[in-house]
Amino acid sequence: MGAEVISLGCRLNMSESEELRGLLAQESDLVVINSCAVTAEAVRQTRQAIRRARRDRPDARLLVTGCAAEVERAALSAMPEVDGLIANVAKLDPRAWNVAPARAEVRTHTRAFIAVQNGCDHACTFCVIPQGRGPSRSLGVAAVLRDAERHLALGSREVVLTGVDLTSWGQDLPGKPALGALVSAILDAFPELRRLRLSSVDGVEIDADLFELIADEARLMPHLHLSLQHGHDLILKRMKRRHSRAQAVALVAALKVRRPELALGGDLIAGFPTEDEVAHQANLSLIAELGLVHGHVFPYSPRPATPAARMPQVPVPTVKARAAELRAAVAAERARWLAAQIGAPLEVLAERDGTGHAPNFAWVLLPPGTEAGMIVTVTPTHIAEGLLA
Image (cartoon, rainbow, N blue to C red; front, side, top):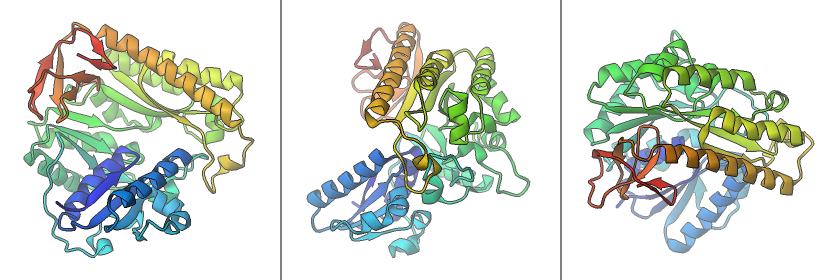
């Protein structure tokens, strides 16, 4: 059965957890917590997952890896449930786990997550990810193509490129290629691949080739998740983000002129230090201005050894209330977007749970008996609990 791997946090962690399941396929008495530390809540959930895993598997060896294993090393290693920590940068090295280097193949999902980049060279004032992931590192084109080929051979119908700072891919490779070159290489190498998707991207790093692909390439899904973080310029400056609100708005407008069906998602932080009501309203209004229908809203929480933790803090109840307002605004935008898709045929990739995702990442309830991995045409007639059906 292999080790049990419990994954928290980002899509990169999900991708790495699939690799770990293959790496640890012969380790039946092992539980691995692949942790997250992006917020204080993520660390709380990591600790909760550790305790739950120990209750469920009292005799198993329990190891923790991931960002929290770096950022919260002392606290996690002191937990009586934990038998050991594996360094985040070493998690995919067989030597770190004391297992043979040969890996058994695992059953893949219908969507394959390929981690093409790791780490980050930026210094956003709220973020501990560089502490947990290290500097930016890119997987070379040949290695990415081999990984994609393996997933396609195992039946994956969609490939999702992931990374901590995906759009910085290539900057540490010879010649400093940009992400657009990698996307083109994948599409050229695998004409049978019908669906390629990007995880979160930094709009200011979108190169000209990638812009053209997002705008025109049918096999690159019309779904873009932007690392926005905020809608007020002074807060963006205090976050040490590298874009302005106007730049984000201009990018989306330019893309939607070329590809009107493009569905937008974004990360937004509520209650960043010094955020007043004016700044919050600017953050709130960005949702409707960009038409964000997939939103990841994070209530700000101070992270250890980050500059933002030393700034004047917004009261916690205010942070929570503002986060709720942001989520409600995204939900309203999403409801309008879903309603507009009723009656329009969608090409949906079926997952194993009876649902699937359209190219624009709308979540769709599938007819009973739909086989996982099929791409089926669904014309939704209504919305059921947030899903098109």
